[in-house]
Amino acid sequence: MDNVNYYNQSELWKDNINNRELIRFQEIIRVVPRNISSLLDIGCGNGQLLKFLLQQLEIPNLFGIDISLTALKIAKNMAPNAIFLYASADKLPFEDKSFDIIIASEVLEHLPYKVYEQTLKEISRVSKKYILITVPNNEDLKRTYIRCPYCGCIFSRCRHLRSFNEDILKVLFKNYQFKVKILREIGPITRLYPKIILKIAIKLKILSLISHGHPVCPQCGWRPERRNHIYKEHRNNIKRKGIFFKFDFFKKFISKTTKPWLLCLYERNDG
Ligand SMILES: [Zn+2]
Image (tube, rainbow, N blue to C red):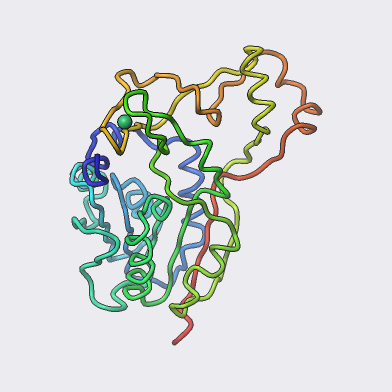
């Protein structure tokens, strides 16, 4: 299943915003510069972020683009004051420096090789002043992998194709005359357990695996029939059970804390 078909699945866009995402949106609002009059949300999906921006900030010209017509249909109702266009991030249908700020939140990690390079170029061409990026923080892609039971292909359940850290973000737009203004971890504090601990805890039934996302095999198109299908290969999304995880000192001893996303705000350098 190619990307266009994948992102046209209606299940992907039905879910309401959860608490984690709400925190991400609030952090985005906090750093959006107040001296802007136009904003483009790249990969706007079902328009939840634009709706939130409309409620919180007074920005006269809000635009969103996406390659999913299914998502755009929902977005038009979600944020009726914004303008939505069907377009790909690597071919933006706008003149140079059309927007004061361009936001790409949870988008770059999904882009295939050539599209990714071209998208960075396009974002910097169309932005007049700022670029705001959020991506998963130091994601271990292997933890998102599942094996297709039909053809054996191993793939990321959430179609994440690359992982980002602070060093990568620092130089992301360096060749395009954008400098970093703010770079920080965002989101609720999350505990990361070593894989071996998770393996043992699952064996002892202290933890159980839960599934999330809507995986579709990119090679043969297989998809699970039940949404709550449990995948043996996936050990990232876990449900805590029992008294074991109630001991704080133990948790601190075996795990490290992190935040789920990185946010980076860039500012144009060339005046
Ligand atoms: Zn397959």
